[in-house]
Length: 370
Ligand SMILES: NC(=O)c1ccc[n+]([C@@H]2O[C@H](COP(=O)([O-])OP(=O)(O)OC[C@H]3O[C@@H](n4cnc5c(N)ncnc54)[C@H](O)[C@@H]3O)[C@@H](O)[C@H]2O)c1
Image (cartoon, rainbow, N blue to C red; front, side, top):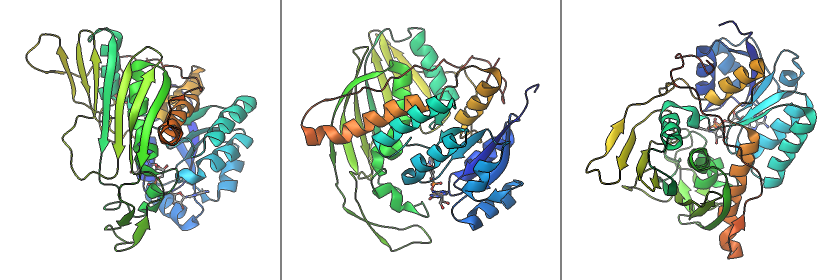
């Protein structure tokens, strides 16, 4: 590989930690030096399962001088607290989404990280997957001309049928917008550039949920945050996207994301995945064409690819792609969706967004740089 490994420490050993541990084992640039959790038993279980040398407290993980990136896989309410501790320890950090719950916390993380000269990162990294990178290439090459508008639909009944601890999805910082919005918004922004303003409506449609997954089967959850969020995003380019995210829809027949341009339409894959299909239909064409993916990283075992990109970036000194700064832009948009209805007006988006460099086509299966 020729590059010195980057040691990472994982904080939060719950459901999604397995996916990151698998990714870290697949990409030679990463080495998991330690795992931590407020529940030490959980940390120990993950360490045993994935042969991680150390299971410890968050404090001990942060004190390890060899760890360069803190990968923060805690619940949303703890994202800011853990990231701010990582910054204090002069470590780069990579948060699971959402970047933070409160906008002020997101702003603080970006400001403090800048002062401490550490990198900020945030999921999702799915826009680095083969499906969405192929879409980005098509947009950049003008395959649909100038993008004019888009639709994005995330319709689901919620997570209480499968997640072992689903309560946090119905508390402030959860809900379909904060949980799934980051995938859809990150994909749209990567195509269309920065957002200008947002108008939305956010409501609680099913105020009580019963958990049907084990081990909490039969427990009732009171829904404390909107479970149906809909509205529009206007982009600085002039394009406009219509978006619905819902945990209150049993079934729907809508596409995930479509982008409509002056010369055709691009149908994008599920942004909560790394693969395809990507479909294109130019003006006047009778059929949709499925486009062969031009980029790799389109399969399983690559969740958390944003961390891999950050590790490569640290070693070569280049910017990484899944930045906290862009995640702050996403966080502001999500708050705007929730706040606009209350305000009865559009909400302007102030945080900057920098379109990440596309990945080169034709990379090796475990590479992120040429
Ligand atoms: N589960 C999924 O499929 C999935 C997918 C993508 C992203 N995510 C995101 O990943 C994050 C974690 O989700 P999850 O499903 O793994 O949740 P989880 O509840 O299964 O795990 C979270 C873990 O964090 C630990 N924790 C909480 N606060 C902590 C703190 N202050 N310090 C140390 N540890 C702490 C908990 O003890 C728990 O083990 C969330 O932000 C979620 O949005 C989850």
